[in-house]
Image (cartoon, rainbow over all chains, first blue to last red; front, side):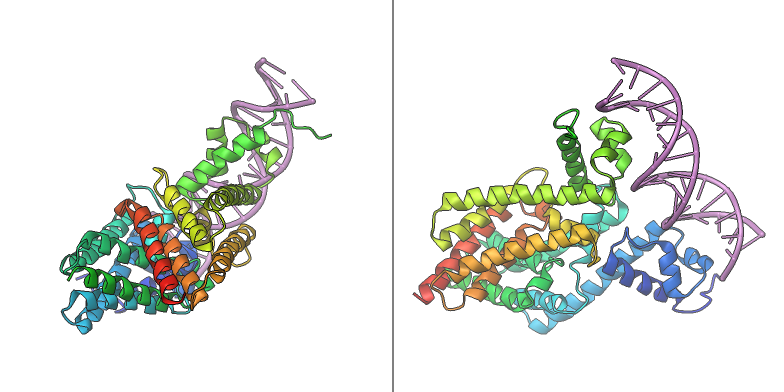
Length: 194
Length: 194
DNA sequence: GTCTATAAGGGGATAGAC
DNA sequence: GTCTATCCCCTTATAGAC
């Protein structure tokens, strides 16, 4: 029943596409380049992904799944305290931003390339970002501070700054800076309204 | 000599192109769309801008000139104190980020679309960002604080966060948040090492 | 002379067929 | 895997209107 010919083929193609899309941009990468880099035939790729739009959607979903796993693990390791969890979140992003091939947040980058509100993959990206933002709100809401919403906005602003891919090469200490700034911000907010 | 037939034509075309490039992305906007929106013939556009690359370069340079003027004015109004000037810088960006059509920093957006290090317009964008960063460093360096470089990094991180265009719709108070965070950060640094 | 309108060339893109 | 169809894009060239 429509068995997969070579198990993992779809995954391999998607991995190649992901690497290219992220490194060079979605619009800049053609299907032919992906086929060439994957070393497969055209039929194979179009068999798994009937159009570029579906391949791009899979690209978004793969990143989403990856991020969810990594974040969940980081949060679990941080324990139950909301402040610790917020710091762990920023530390996780800081670790990503320090990677050599880091080029910003794939969701934000995609939306920069495709701002159209009706774009299917763009909707996926916006949904993921809204959910991430909601998670920050939720954590801040569990803290005994005077203005949880304002605190969440500050953390989100710092995350946005960390995720700026194009200027990361200009300050390689952005990760530590962001973590320290979040720690201080949390500390002040907790100290002022205990 | 070589006088322009209709004065202001070049400017008008460039304004139309700028609006489209910024709103939809450079790769997404074709020359034909610009021609259609400008209501001119193809020859006229290609007479003023022999290629799309040159039009895009002019787009970058126009934004650069605009930013330099606006920032210079904001800094002049802020006076001589480096801390006031840093706050004014962030306030200026916050005002931009609050505009209805704000869609992030055009230089960062362009580099997201065209990461190629050899791209001519990309080099322009990187140079502008480096100079902006250097201006922040210079201002922080004139402050009596223990770690001016670290302070500059924090301010730059906040600016990067403010300039994230795709998530600005998710928190419309980002401007005030950024200004308040910078004020606090400056205040703490000055108080700790006077 | 200045500009618009239109056609056409060259290249590369997605996608389908064999 | 190669080959083809179709389309869009950048760019140039030609022809026509004010």
